[in-house]
Image 1 (cartoon, rainbow, N blue to C red):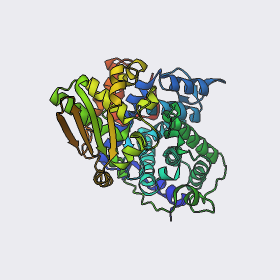
Image 2: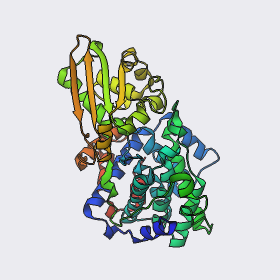
Image 3: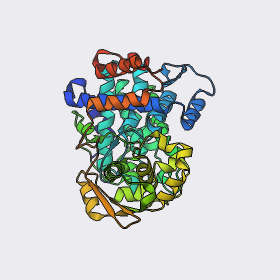
Image 4: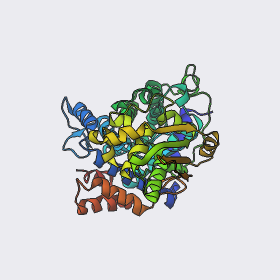
Length: 450
């Protein structure tokens, strides 16, 4: 039976020494990846709205808002800094058959509480490892998407566990924190259905804030419903259905987490990579394209292919990065998929708007079965006006767990994302601090995030 006691006991069993060198390396990659994405999102309008909100009535506290001068209490820092790491939709993803959350949504919560605790780099890695493992187990065993809940419903629990770990809460305190977080903060799937708006990129930041606040309440003596999962009208009955978890103190679920190569929704990665390869191989001109056909798996069709609302009316970034027709059209026109594709003038281009309406997306049950076996398949056909058909088939993409990014590739992504803000020396300082996190404290890392 999955209980708050089981989660708290697991968190207590995780230590730096329980993590293999490979797990530590992968966790550090996720930290560096998240920091780079966060720096790249600085100045984005929705992120600035969060920044204005968390500082509106004054500031001051133990935690730094990344890229800003203000310091704030930890819950506010968790919200703002998570908004940075999540907003661009360039973050990591855990690939489970019925749910695809983003474990990097936990990192800023653990960092904020690490600042409060004056934690070491080793302690930071412990907290992040706890969060990644719990997020992975919930995604795999307790998917909530089809029951109408958003995946950040998992995040508030995993982030609370990770943040509570780095704050060194007692087992009873951590049970209370998880009980408060999981009872009070269950987000609805409407965030990602129908006409998508900017809350899509901020919902996990709200979950991060709620997780940290739950942890602080528990640390100060607040009792929570520790029968969160199994209790009458509890999480299993209302939110998830029955499930069990098998939590590993080695925290190897980080290996099941993909890193994005393209600025695109998780399930679009293989298709985007495929159409770019096809366009370059055949030297395609968008003016010669009569049709683009994508066969994909059920989750991709549901979320970004039209299963939860039309994906052909694309006017904003939030709509564009959750529209397979848009992403395939833009990738063919540009032969790349970067942040530039989501600028207003790029979205409105006639070439892209015309081409996206020539895209059809269909689910192939065979590809769904392959996805559930660990692949991310995509079959793309481009038909030209002269009747010629070009085809590409993908099983995965660069950054998928079967083709993980190397440290050098993650570092390259970090430098690309931060080049407009940091000089080479500052970039190197951040890279080396993360690479050797055991030799630093959380404060050393945060001090670099100007």
